[in-house]
Image (cartoon, rainbow, N blue to C red; front, side, top):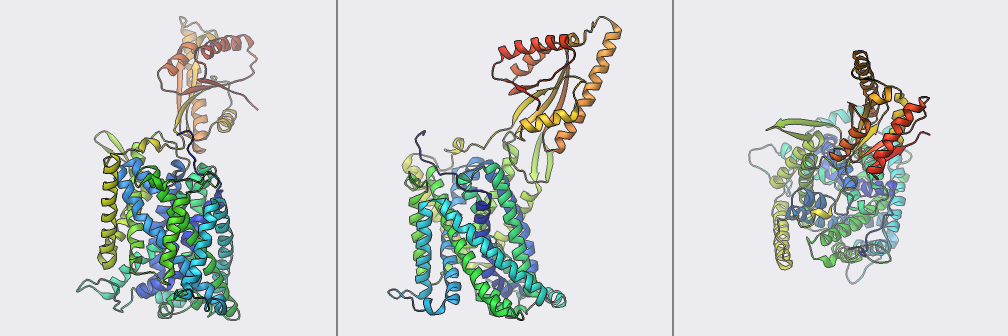
Length: 630
């Protein structure tokens, strides 16, 4: 609809980075001691292995989000690739994750604030609601208001909090490695693979080592500490210049999170015993920093400050993520369209912001998160599994789609005369996420049951809703609306035979075309331009040499352009210039042809050459463009 009110693009690259980092960077303050409880000294190993999966997820989003810059993320990619049902399942799996994210990190933020201001916060009570619940209510209410007024303000809050958090985390890591890190202790503890304690929340398998089972269980929890990079994709529809900013933001988020998680887990194992870290799992980072000589007391306050700001920022991304996700699902009729309501002034999905913000507020008001928190892992892994399948399939069915940034590394397989492309990171992510989902189903008894119930309830509601509006559940009713940011366009760049310099052509092409254009470097050796009579053997021989020299020249230009990331092919034709250009355009092989203007001393030849071009231009108006030299 032409009068439809849409989301407003107000997020820059650093704002996009802040959304991705805020939702993941705070996890280390909750996860470090928790992972040590199960993995023991192997905590850094667990984080490193799950980090590989996180890298694959982050870089997949870096490719897909700018290619399809819509709110919804994996839900949109699944609809485009498979059907509406799988798109719904992917979105439904993330809804509870984001809602729990609002509550969980608001409570964590409240906990750190109570550490900083104990006299103030401990006195807060409201109708029997515990102090942490009251603080969480205040924090979430402020987030609902900020997000209601516009994503610009919401992102500015995240940026300020993330900058402060990064500075504090840098302080903790720097002084930790300088003052307390012991390489010998790190190596010694690294060999302790899993805790030997029997823990009630683990669904143990008989006759299998307790240490190994605790270690395997820790992998699922460690992956939960990486959940959140998809927040960048949820805000893609509100990101300025998504083709440029989203890949940059996603890659920086991945790098920053890796430094934080690997840095803290390595530092902790080289500084204190894993048992102490596990015993103090609620404030493990603070317990680590208290061991610092001289700066320990100040450092503990900084830890609380960093925990407060990063957890608050993470709760904010939960509000942003769930509101955009549900609004997107409403837009594409996966849930009632009532949820897709964009405020005409603030340009935000106000209904979903208020509704899911209040749900998160209610959960947080109890002062703790109930046992359904295991769904956080289940939902994230299910959505990531669908993400990897969609990513691999999109590589094989959307070849003409322009991809601003592409995940490197690809395997090609010839199968029944068809080329199958398998991106390496997509394959690694698919296998890794699949293994973690299996481990979750094995060792998380509550998550296994509740996850299945959550998905089943969602599917039943979805089928009933689609039946009500007259749509089959498995069709792709809205796939045609999900258009890529651009397609690959074939352009023929007409290069005069022999007389052009390679560097000059490369400069002209790179200044006028970005990588969404597939370049056909084209030269037409027209005998009329060289006063050649093909009835004479000598002239035919000269024509052959001109063609050979031209091919060599174009190959040189093509190699330079390929190094710059362009898709290039070389074609040299012999014959009448006007007829060949007409044939290329009429065949549909090229969208348009670009001519390079030049000044030549061969005035008569140039005039004859241009006379033919002018006739073609007048015949194919709009499909021929002239590129001028600087």
